[in-house]
Length: 234
Image (tube, rainbow, N blue to C red; front, side, top):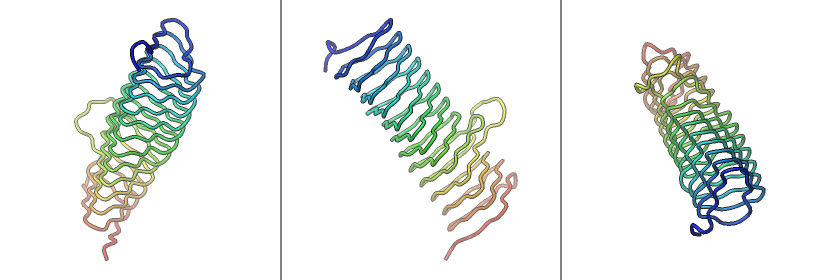
């Protein structure tokens, strides 16, 4: 692919099936068929009716993906993305808003804006300083969440899970609400959860936990409330 195979849409246009070096949308565009490109940049509005595979995607406007999407390198969202089917990405960076109505698969995240996932969110490194709503399971090897506003996550699972406020300024209350948190090492602050299970667990300030089950060590800050503590050591 080279620059000859690039497309720039300034007014209204259609993206046809093919392979492109760069696709730039400054106006309104629709893709009726699948296509591949090295770089997709959306400044205006874009509707993708079929599967799209891109090495890198940058969204400053609005993009709707009606079928599966794949970004092999970085997906950067400064505007709005709505994906109706599964989306697979290496690194996703959200400064605006992203909504995935099925599953999101990733290698690494950097969430500063708003992320919503209707089903599961699965990957390796999950980092967030934004607002989250995940209706299914958030699963990653390492999870680091710095709450900004109220985030709701049905289930959280990982090897190392840290939920802590780290000096980020925000208006109003900031916390994470979850049904279940399960991992090897868990450190929680500003968290409400029914059940926390793990090996080594630290409950810091401003937490309300229904039940904690642990196999290693447990420490609970006196500014938090834990309903029941159960040690499962053999």
